[in-house]
Length: 322
Image 1 (cartoon, rainbow, N blue to C red):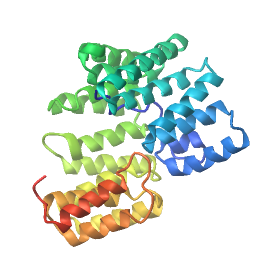
Image 2: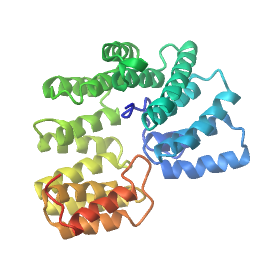
Image 3: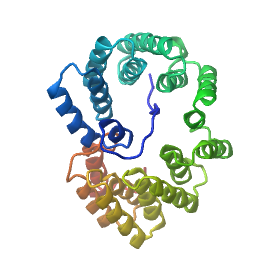
């Protein structure tokens, strides 16, 4: 079963609360705060919910399930808690054997129903439902037409995320014009929505059939204006400059990124990956990967295992062929 690619449903600018840190991709910082909060009160349901999100983004799905289940047990009338539990069940089903995955699918559906009975327009939960319909086999309830229906429902009550949801459904369609239109609609609804601007930049840089590095750079710079404390826009710019062999710009943006987000060195990894793929300046790529391996990877970013795999490609000459 393949349920990966779920979208988060909230978006805040970088701040110091666990919530805003999580939404800004600062999972390591949030983890420290949440652990302290749970040390003071192990039955803090909201802290357990946040802990579940953090563990999920570090790949600890059993831990994420345990924390979300405790949060739901403590506060069974919270739609967000049920939605989070549904999401981690979905991810776990994705990584399970067929038979074991079916059990998690049933649990996911139960939590989706519980969340939507409390809040029928709960965006997080609708996104989980949409991605399940898109990715799951029909035998267990997958339905691509229904996925589009759910995305349409999200557009009606939460257009910022609804247009991003519709764009996600088209991500592998090669329909650049339609996908670009949806992402521009998402930005148009709220130009201050970092995620929408970032996704438009990522489209131009990374997923469009015909890449547009000039537009990617423009949109990434807009994202930096919105929040220079997130790694995402630096990540896009690092890819653009690496692919374009703009060495001075690449050195500059990596230095800016490390100063602004010292605990997330993913832009170094992404630049290295581009260089290795293109077999360009491999000593530079190697140095970037060693830099990346110098600290714990941030949640949702490439793991050390992935970085070591990239180094293996260089050391064994398997480059420019993948």
